[in-house]
Length: 427
Image (cartoon, rainbow, N blue to C red; front, side, top):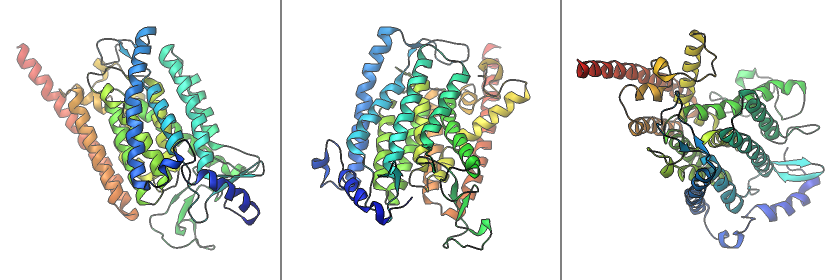
């Protein structure tokens, strides 16, 4: 809800605490421009992750926390995992130091909780930290001891419930119930049809707790859990998920900055820096992998950053369009051959119908070359998403589909050529 006269005094007191860097470096950062602060916070998070990862590697080696060599995996020797701990800790520390929700915008959104007003951004940030701690803790245990799919799905669902922040009358956290209509730019019309409204919604216009909110709750669950699993599925080669997510985070930072959402831009820059700081350790040949604790945290962070401040849902969908379509294609192939859609492929049997990065790998490209290809595609779609007007976003999505088909055909051609070369060498 928006600020009203009855809670102005509460909001003013909160504004003095949160509007300008309320944490440890408040005095130092008072005179630093926001665009400079965005860069500083990102670099700081990068350095933190880079440093923390050395400690995590030592921890894994001391206690034997390694990713074992398996038939479905590419690496030939055990690799330390739990790299996600370094990324999350760096993000946590840097965000507590640099991030502060802004109350300087007109009609700043606040949430009334137990009679007290809190900035909407602060509430979402706090809920996000609690949900992230749950996700990282559960999946760190999974990295070390192993968990079956059901407990992990329950943990993901609990994290979504935390992010929703349900109260007696409204949801105080993340509830995804509407997107901007790219064909309408006027003010809301009371008597117009739903498709003539500037915002397309799922039955509700406010985050109120009601039966009509069930579709929005389910869509929010699907978006957040889907994003976590998307990043988990593309984490199949050294440096691949790390680089793609860092590029995505960079464009979320840029669009937040261009929209004047400086506090969200700082948070996105911290996330981007924390992820990028892991890449030197994760680059092929990797000294450590992020594990499920890392991929799940990266997924939930992207899902939340897409919703905070709005206007970033289409951006992330376009940038991550190739991985999303790749997962859908792989699941269809698994169902067609009678396999559970969430069960991992046996690579030497299913290399023609598995994930794109594995298809390219069996086509003769190495891990670094595959990263260069998919980084370039991700960056190109990031630029396209940043520059395209809203009404042309559908053309961008169509281009994502065409690019995906092109990459699949190219990978098939590479595999055939690679097989012919092998036969010629053995003849």
